[in-house]
Amino acid sequence: MKQIQEQILSDLKKEGNKEKADFFPKFFKTGPGEYGEGDKFLGVTVPIQRKIAKKYYKEIDIPSLKSLITSPFHEVRLTTLFILVLKFESKDITEKKQKEIVDFYLKHTNSINNWDLVDSSADKILGAFFFQRPRDVLDTFHISKDLWKNRISILSTFYFIRKNDFKDTLRYCESYLNHKHDLIHKATGWMLREIGNREKKTLISFLQSNAAKMPRTMLRYAIEKLPESERKFWLSVK
Image (cartoon, rainbow, N blue to C red; front, side):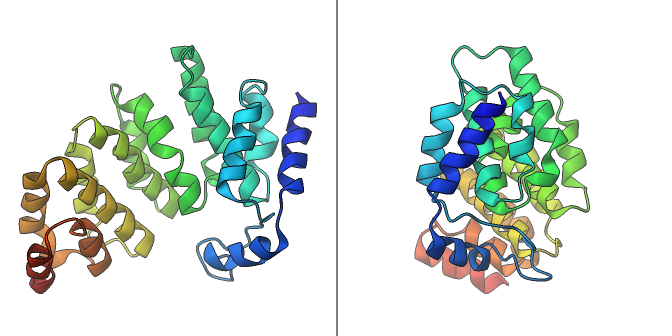
């Protein structure tokens, strides 16, 4: 499988764009003390990464993805996650193989260390797998001191939301009212908005109990799809 790994890396490097490689570190906050500190970029766009993932996902086995998920290059890690999602969602996937993918994902969460990496994979892999299983792993991530595990926990519930199961999302959002990081405020607000898109009364109930305590960013994201008059009202509560 080494040849396929090298080919994936070669394909990504060929598609690298210097202008984007210079821009992405700023966009993904890789400076000293920032949340993506030290990350490296090839300058490859997401559509190209998805195309490469689709080209190789059937050929490469899961253990062979280790050198790619631990790559210092952001796009290599993201492409690896696209491959894992494609494998997980394959029509002929077995439960055993899905568990292998989940175990691989959980073993390498240190490499899933920026918001796009989390958002492109957590609900599709962990959310889908744990929907009808005990969710202890997500609860553990939820109370972790690690920002990215926190985001993985809340984003994994996006799958539950799409199945009209809101309880864990609401519980996580409420406990994150005092979270220090803006990326969690955005994630929780986004998930609340998704709940509101499906069941507005549940969102309104959450706002009635918590709007005055919600971080401004979280509140703005949560009410984004409400009518303007309602948005103004909830913003005035702060």
